[in-house]
Image (cartoon, rainbow, N blue to C red; front, top):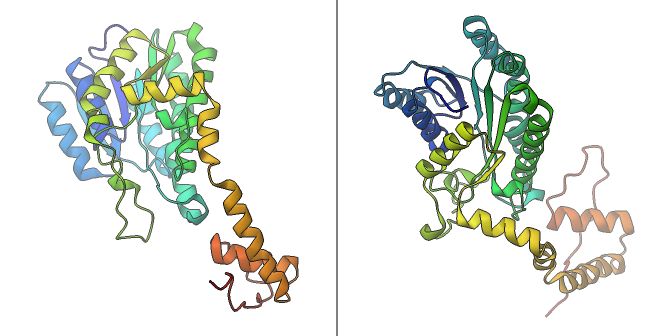
Length: 317
């Protein structure tokens, strides 16, 4: 899509960060904007900045994790504009913390916002995108969809799923003039890391990468819009992302080796604790219940028989 002037572009998650900058970059190319986000206040600030570029801008408070809300939003766009020319699936949430401690509601939230909502919106817009001589879908994913990062497993899974979805769409509809780009930023200087706080842990201090490793959201947006114009399939923005992908392609065993460090010592400690429980009179099921609920935040069913208490799970020094 060489010329974005007067095209209508829908950007989700446009209130802040990468979504805001992509919206402003598209406005700078002359595209008319439909902006969506759950944060209405920040969304309006994005719209005010975009309107200074003399293009049409409208905002919609929309929760893409709510199927009814998303369908009503899509119905409105189809009724008034017969869809859009450019769809930017950018809305996303993150969770950082041990996966086994992640509440079920957080699992659902990440899957609904980062994956299921984008699928539903794409499904609704797809016939109207295909009805145009040229149209484009930009899916904002992550380098963490290409390689895993501990304590972000569900986030990585949703981004990996979006990468697969992008590739499949591009392969299926490229002949019909639909361009699809997978955008994989690495560490971007936004509120991403601050937003990664686990639920209920107010004193949690997320780790921030060194400034030298961060790329600006403005740079990500410029690369994203250029990819739309050139119909690029995959865009990795920053040096960290290129390095991670290069390592995964050349020495794929490295991350697996690093993740297994200390495995034998941990297994030995686990066997010793279970042996103590067996010696204290627990059978196998009871011992495992004690061990898992103590160490791995396991949830017993309400109907479960009370687990016998143990005096100590560790050997005396």
